Each structure stands twice: as structure tokens, then as C-alpha cells.
Length: 536
Picture 1 (cartoon, helix red, strand yellow):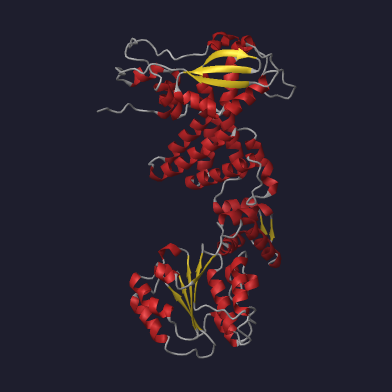
Picture 2 (picture 1 turned 120 degrees about the vertical axis):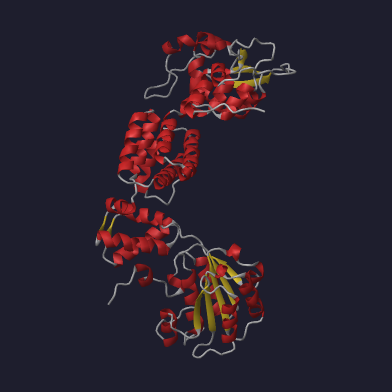
């Protein structure tokens, strides 16, 4: 006897066996019991979630010799023929290969003949969205007034391509993607039945790769069993699918945090040499980051093994949420860039180096806000821009001798809140705030301390974007200051009125002139290899 693949061997034969689609099976079960059978059904949803299997079960339920019944016997000749696909009264049509109006007219001629053995003549049309517009139109009248005891069941993965006049004549049921934990449970039960030894990491990896389809999961499991036989291990599963272990992504992100560019590129080269697909590498790294972000938010995602949580929690503890989101957006753009690049390896190397230097990069909005504070035309061209600086920066050189104001293993030493300490440790204070909000640190650098009162500091800013940034992040700034000083600190922000220049002249024409404006801007230009565009 030839081998039967798992997807066929364990195909559902009753409503109770259809996995994770209870919202559909319960309605159909009640409809059959109540003799409220519609003449046309539309089953929609992703591939491999049970649409065609549900159509066959419904056909057996209606045509079983003991029926109509929601629990077909699967033993009578009607049930057996429908299961094997040989019934003359239950006709399965592939919409992808029978798209024309002539195919539908041939179907309509067959409708003139009554069922030969069964109570209902049932047409199951899979991938119905592939029918042509003329074929759909030919179906309309038949669906509006079908012959007695004729039933249509349509299945599609793309319901938006089915014309509305067809959908309005059907009872529509939307099938859901099967949750990963449900797929894992089903695979685990089947492996016990098949006497296969398999670890939980392998089950979760296969379930994630199946992308919500149980049929895909069973097909992947067949592939795995062909290689691993009766003992499946995570190392062999990764080898089959060319996947990088999560421990490697953990190590890469630790190098990003440590700013170890050389180690990161070396590790990348080892991954390249193993033959890993770069798109797959970025996709899986994004998925790893997604779980890290969810863990950072205090969530417990069910699509990963709980034993792996410490692996993600370790990275979540190293980065602020903003940095994790920044890395995610960077990787998303990289995934797009890799598709069109002639040298994708170079792109990936540069991206990883940039991630190591992300603390040194300024957000484009911050750069724009700096340009908005450019001087008027009366300022000498050759003189560097004089941005308003907080007076507290005067003693920043003493920062290296200041007591630590960062969290450590020992009890934190709180500072007395006064102008002297605010001046003395301003550099460290701004650096601490930068870790939670880079925009706030830039705004504070461009602010002036107007007054220091009991438990309150008043900042004065001249740029509206800086004012808005400080107001938006007021609570976070107050929290950081309160952690540093020996009492709760409140802040107030005032917007200084400045005279708007009638005209701004920018005479600098070269990239070197722009780099001379600001060291941070120069660093940004070097990192991104920016070029000076031609103006009109």
C-alpha cells in the first residue's frame, strides 16, 4: 500500500474533526438540525484552514443515508463515494481551470438531471474567484432560482475578487487562520499517534512556518519526517529549512548593544557562509524583535515556546522601547532594499554597523528643527552657528568626577536639588534623558534654565518644535529628574518670542560647508553617505 501523506491521512471527516473553526461548524450543525439549508454557501479564508474539507463534510451530512444529519456515518456508500471524490451527485470543480462561460453553461445543462443516488446534487467550486466575469454572470440566474435539491458551495482565498451579486446570493462564512498554539497541539497529538519523538521547539517552529494553515503544517511535518524519521530534533529542523537559531539573533542584538561592529560583521559572514537566505534572515530577525517588543510590553505571546522567554527577555532588558522600534523599522526598510540591490551582502553589513551606532544618529526631525533655528542674514557667513545653549553647560567638564546617577547594583546616591548641582551634572542628566527620548535631550540642550525653585525648574526655549517636544515628554523628563534628585521635580516650559527674519540667505554651496554647521550634522552626513542635491 502506497504512503498517504499526513494532510490526506488526517483530513477531517466530521464537523467535530474540523480544527479551530467552531464558529462555522456550530452554525452548520444547527442549520442541519433545524432543516434550514441554504441553496448556496461561500467559504472564504486562507489556504489550508479547512474550507474544502468543510464543504465535503456538509455534502456528506446532507446526503448520508441516515440524514440529513450533522454527524454523517462515513460508512454508507454515499459517504464513502463523497470522501473518495467519486460520487456522481457531488461534483468538485476547480475554478482555476474551468473559468469560462462555456464551463458554467455545461454545468447548467447538468442541473436538468435529478440526483441519481443522493438526496441533493451538490457542486463544490474551489477557487471560485478565478471564474471570468461572464462565467459569474451566467451563474447569477441559477443562484437566484436554483432547481430543487441543488446546492452550491463556493470556496475562495480571495473573496474580494468575487463579484458582489454572487456574494449577495450566498451565505458567507469566513474561516480564520489557525492559531499557532492550536497547530502545535494538533501536531503533538498526531505525532503521539504516529509514534514520533519530537521536541516542543520543533513543533513551534513548524507551526510558525505554516503561517496559520494546518494543511501546510502537516505538509512541512511530512518533509521533516522524511529526513528525521522517528526522532525529530530542533537542530535538524533548522537544517532542513535553512533557519538560524534564536540564540544567534540574541547574540547579534547583544553585539548591537555593546556597539561591537567588528564582532557583528564577523558573525554575519559566518551566517552568509552557511548559505542562509538573506530575506529569510531579515524576516526571522524581525520576528525575533517582535517577540522582544511584546515581552518588553509585558505580554506573553502564545506563538513561541514559553521556555524561550528568557532568551527574549534578556534583549528586552538591554534596550529602550524606542530603540527596539527603531531597529524594527530599519530592518523593514532593509528587507525592501535587499530585493533591488546588486550587492545585498553589503547592504546588510552597513545596516548592522548603523545599528551599532544608532545612539550617535539624530532623527531627521531633530535635524530639521536645528535648521529652523538658523541665524538671520545679518550673522557673518564664516562664523559657526551660535545655537542657544543652556547656561548649565558651563561646568560640564566636571561631569567625569560626578557621582553616578545611573541605576546600578548598589543604592543610588541622590543629589540635592539646586542650581549648582543642576549646572554641575547637566551633561549626565541630558545623556540619561537621551536614552529614553532622544528628541527631549536635543530640546533640553537648546533650552535655557530660567529659574530653579522649590521642586521645580523652568526652561525657556526659542524654537516651537523644542517647546512641543518638552511638553509632550514632560512626564518622562520629570520622572528622570526625580530619580536623580532628592525630591520630586516638576518642570515648566516657556516659549520665547523671537524675531522672524525677513529673509534667510544661505551662501554655503558645498557639502563641507554643511558639515561645518554642526558636528552632529557632519556625523549624520558621513554615516548615511549623504550627497548635496542641486537646487532650482
